[in-house]
Image (cartoon, rainbow, N blue to C red; front, side):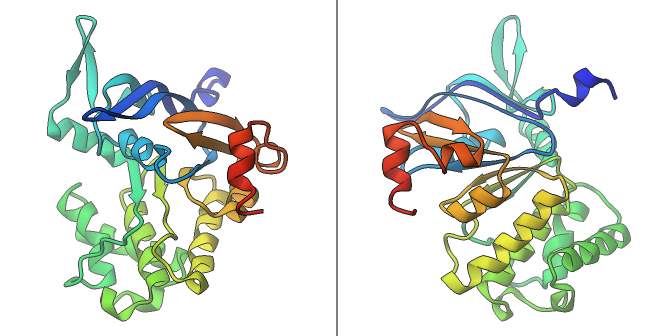
Length: 259
C-alpha cells in the first residue's frame, strides 16, 4: 500500500445538507475520517448529530453535498454531472461496509443471541451457516458473552443486549462502525460494560464514529472530537483541545454542564 493510499480518508463528507420539510437539520457538514480513527461527535439534542450519522449509511437521504465511504459515494452516483439515486439493492451492498449500533438494541426477541448475530451474514450476505456461526462465537467471546449464545434477549440485561447488538453489527465485517448514543437507553450501572467493549474495539483499530454524551469516553478513546450545534460543526480537534480547552463559547457552555 502506498503512502497516498494510507492517508486517504475512509469517510469523506462535503457540504452535507439535510432538511425535514422546512426544518434545516444539517447546514453544510464537512468531515474526513481516516482508517482506524475514532471520532466522537458531541452536541446538544437537536444539533443534528444522529441525523448526520444516519446519512452516512443512507438511512436518511441528503439534500445536498455528498458522503463517500471507502471511495464510494453513498446512495448516489454522478451521471452527466447530476446526482442519480442508486437502486435499493446497490445501497444495500454499500451498507455491507458499515455497521451501526442504535440507542435501542433492536434484537429479534424470538431468536437466541447466536441466531441474532448469524441472521444477517447468512440471510442477507449469503455466508455459510457454519462460517457465520464460528465467527459469531468469536465475536461473542470478544464482547465477553460466550456463555449467552443460547439465551434470548429477554434473559439479558440492557448492557448485555447492547453488547450483542455490537457483535451483530461486527458480524458483517464492516470497515466502519457507527454508534448512535449506544448507552443512552441503559441504566447508569450498565453503561460501563458497553463503553469498555467500545474502548476495546478502538484499541483494535476499528474505524468508529460515535455520537454520545459520555465525555469520559470521548476524552479517553477518541482521536478527534467534533462538537455540533444547530446543524453545524462548531469546533473540532483532539480531545485535550476540544474538551480540555474549548475555544467556542457554545462548546464551553455545553461542556460546563458535564465537567
